[in-house]
Image (tube, rainbow, N blue to C red; front, top):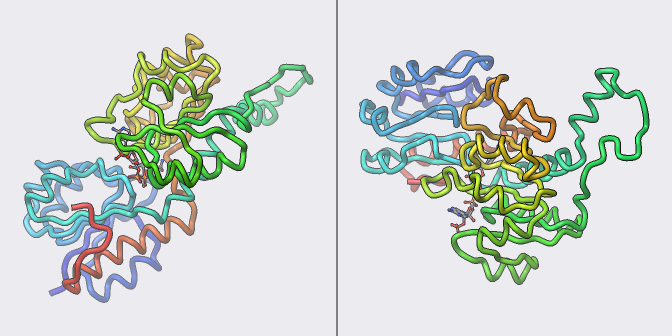
Length: 320
Ligand SMILES: NC(=O)C1=CN([C@@H]2O[C@H](COP(=O)(O)OP(=O)(O)OC[C@H]3O[C@@H](n4cnc5c(N)ncnc54)[C@H](OP(=O)(O)O)[C@@H]3O)[C@@H](O)[C@H]2O)C=CC1
Ligand SMILES: O=CC(=O)O
């Protein structure tokens, strides 16, 4: 009997079709709406392999209801949507997609810095809405990215790729991790800072840590107040690492100059979210790794893990 592979979102036909040679493939049928949690509760009971996306909350309670589940492949590098400790205890392997999305996500992080600093969304909207009525000396004037100081919180794969882009813009690069990276410091000229010093010195602060109990709410009122009132905060990591209510207050009160984020606590974010009322806030719909090539490579990486499992080989890209 073929193992049951449940895919919790609609994937391209050319990816799914070949899987049918070895799996009894069952898939969520539509791209417009993601699988509701109640459906996940139902299908986890029959799946041998579960192919998940970040939207799926795979808790301990949910995992405990699984009868045959042996492998979860998460179509993302971040895996905070899955209780990996519980999975490990229950003998369920979990895999992710590190590396293949690094450069693409760094491109997006740098893009978000540029569009936030140069007020690109406001400017483009002005043209489209017919509000471009004059040339003014400080009209839509933003902030320079070149030559500024970039502080990266979470200098991992994506952080390093972002830092390399920043070097091309003659930026000074500071970073904060739990562990220093002396070799990278020497090779690329980054400088380590404690968190508070990084916040105080940087013109751009970019958050690129995973979401963990330690990073949840890492940037709140106190941290935002440490930043310069001319500085810009970018979050491409996970919603909730930056406290959204504190960010709203800091932007509204001019404690920081602007912010751009690709991620929210609740995704998709509600159009009534207070942050969306602010002109100095740029919002993107979690598109960090969204290029056709990278998404294909992410899917292929998950499939590699499935093949390893099937063939009884050590499972590549395994988190636990
Ligand atoms: N917006 C999007 O679409 C995307 C978002 N992401 C997010 O980006 C995250 C990073 O990805 P990637 O670069 O591949 O991951 P890495 O694991 O390579 O890098 C994460 C870095 O964060 C640091 N870190 C972890 N905990 C803390 C902490 N408490 N304080 C300070 N630094 C910390 C780690 O260093 P150390 O252990 O020394 O602290 C590490 O260097 C993902 O987990 C994901 O959530 C990723 C891809 C796309
Ligand atoms: O947010 C995306 C990821 O890959 O993690």
